[in-house]
Length: 277
Length: 164
Image (cartoon, each protein chain N blue to C red):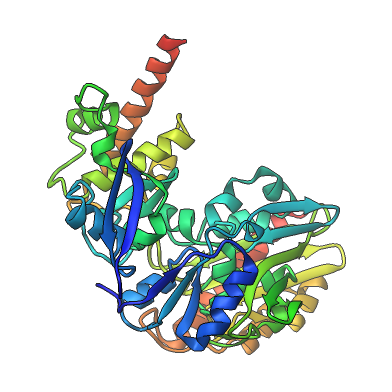
């Protein structure tokens, strides 16, 4: 399990990292925690000439909680996210979801930025970020821009991020106090991706529903959210089942996945309703 | 690809060596530094036999390049002995409670348990099981592994109380 050779870079700031990306084009990739990319490199499914390690870039670190808004540095690890008490009070949905990702060792290394930027439909954070209406900040040679999580995902591994841009921060509105929340996930074993997972928020004038690993992108459905806001749980489940497009794989045939999707979504809704104040 | 000069602190000692950028930390530890406590099990980030402590984090050293660990502080199971070379509390409790059968997963289990008890000195059984969920025992000997970790927690806490 030895990857093909590459040159290693550890830039100390964002501008240098983007400079290296631009110098080497699609030969270069950035690595955050590496727990998606390095396994792919070992399988030689990802081959690259230049690996740009983001670990020394201070601008990509840190969790900030301001009036009504949370900002997560892209290099925030799942472990740091779980351990942060202020964050768990502001947006408890994040901790609930992160605890269901992979295993402890992977959570020490795996980052929020890597999870959302990778574009793997199996990753949990993209659907979660769509549910929470996050915005992603991207830094490139032309400066900084923001893209809504709900507009970021185009297809499996294809996102709105350009090859020479780096995802730097995730901006999240804090849901109003008393908002019910839940992240429910069905997986075959610890460390597996979801057979189906659902992120749900139910609050005053705001309900939002997104699902994971049931299409080639995360699925956020406005219709499902509107039905839920009106108290129509069956309507919400129906709208979501119309929006997903699961494919048969080793996690099961399509009919099974649709069944699991409905079960998991109902569980998440029940749990979110029970927590609503 | 030319080799890089890698330097880090391993079990309290400065160590260094040459490695191609693509060399995984587990291979650098075992083959270059001849530190064979951490084992290669699945080599696909699943089994946890290669777990080492890197800057206070439990890390699967098959999923980190040695160059990424340049400058880090690393502890392996060898570093968890007492200063006089006798078995540390966790190691002793694994022996006493038969926390190892074939022993292959043991270095990863003990290194992971070390970090778990640093972060949560009084875990419940459920917290121990959740905390070692990234480590597989192919003998399925989890019962005694959990017992050993809980016993080690008890001992470490009573040592701490005695010291205070």
